[in-house]
Image (tube, rainbow, N blue to C red):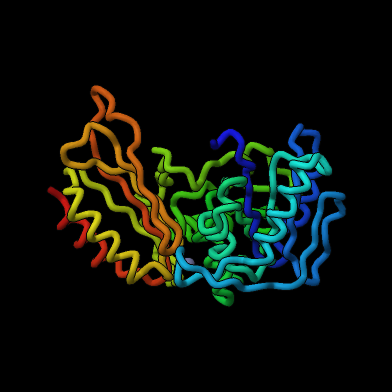
Length: 325
Ligand SMILES: [Zn+2]
């Protein structure tokens, strides 16, 4: 029952982006949420909070399902399980969890932990990945650090810090670059950790809901393309998909390109169905479900976004077109 699941937010960010400042701010605000923080920040300044748990050793467990490209975080499973136990005994009270990951971490394995471990999936619900980007240093960090690019690609929301340290032109150029990498994550400025709490919580980024917002400037953008390895593209069509063909194509795609697919989502028009089909995934873990009915007067159509590393866009698009009925 999703009402009893504890929502979890993964907070990630570039080194020095002000992620910890943001977290401190969230914890000190009077917003009525009781938040447990799990920190995985090695050797950086920690957050002073009595619900904070610090974890130092990493543990790898073998899995039977899920992604072959990710290893489930054994340390995270243990901490989350422990928190849940103490909560149900009444030792501690919290109704949300924020996981702050180190600036070097790939969010993939952290995210996948919530889908692969049954006990975790019974108690917790991954809400969203929030990425804090440092406006001043991002252009350099995006060049030098593969993790920085991945954190952008994974994000459901991007919070941009230190905007006051760059010119308007630099700010606009960076936004355009981030949008090319990830058109589905809204970009919001954050000033000294000051971000409205509803920009961070209850984003429902991993739900199979029909919400697929693509930044309208993504397609209009006529600026030069950056040669970032993380790129995205959108597929649209007003023609219905042949369900069998599409399923075959997508499962093959995920087998081959799963490790390089960070996030993908689609709201689909299937032949023979009066309801939307929604699918989404992280790496090789893909989920799909029937969504709402197409409304009277609404023109059924397909909209899909893929975000990944060096994806063969033309091959994806061609393959998808061949799945149309
Ligand atoms: Zn993976």
